[in-house]
Length: 414
Ligand code: ACM
Image 1 (cartoon, rainbow, N blue to C red):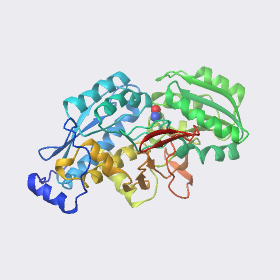
Image 2 (tube, helix red, strand yellow):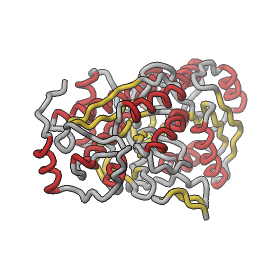
Image 3 (cartoon, rainbow, N blue to C red):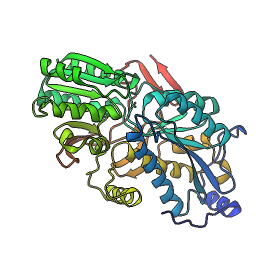
Image 4 (cartoon, rainbow, N blue to C red):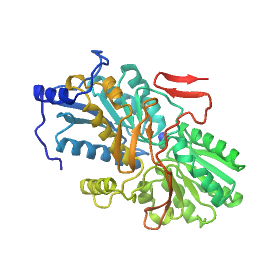
């Protein structure tokens, strides 16, 4: 449990910040939400019910863990971070409604939340209209350039640039693409198809199933008939569990027809049972087995807070480290200047030694430099890391769209 410490308030906090403080030259817009009375209010907006609760509940827990740790150690800039928790129930319209509440009624200076790109798209106008900040920890499809979102998950170049050529080389050139039916899988597949074309590989089928879909028998029949070399999966939520279980029950063999996923983490593996996941591949910047002192500390803290059987994964880890980045940004500001616009400016270029390794917020596009890795799931439900990028890899959210570039001034088109 959190040990409450005394938080510095008023002149003591102001003095502490002013000594090493960051020059606060930005917005003085009185409409902006602002920290006050020794408290920094933030929204926590992850689904605790509905089809993506399977993953979002763990993002919620990683977020609260980081907030509790920071508060137990004296807060951010001497102020307590106060989480305001809402459950948007895996429904984009509810995401938008709750986001409006957090920004307009609760006057949070930032909101941490969302898994699906459909829900991020739904809340975007709320943050853009009020110049507030939405912190999004999930891998996503790129092709977005907003000064009101901090993106701490991977974009396609960070998950696919090493992964696709490696799979083609090791398994072959006939690919079957299966995804949930919304923007994220379609854009990831768009990028995947470009890479496959460059490698002379072929897409034998491309299929989309509704969100929450759980009946994959027609897909399994097609896999049996078409015998692709690789099944590239971008299904999300409960569908990940259903697809793997039905593949396994059909007796298909990952040695000859593996699934290669951007969305299957230790969390979905725990839900489906390791038997159904063993032998399949995932590309991600983080795996729970990653060997670093920061990761050991994170895993131990997560398990001690939420249960010894719990897993950490490549979306819960950014959910955790983005709170640390938030703290670092807040600590560059005088307490009276803690508002979304100043936080954004203070965050640009900020680095943090995360469980996955050193990460950095790219000042141009507010995405994050990450450390991509390729993992193969083992029969104990953990991944063996087979390959990792030589160095951290910068985010290129418009890589599939040559001529378009996300810059600090907005989207530039050549
Ligand atoms: C996703 O929808 N960004 C997984």
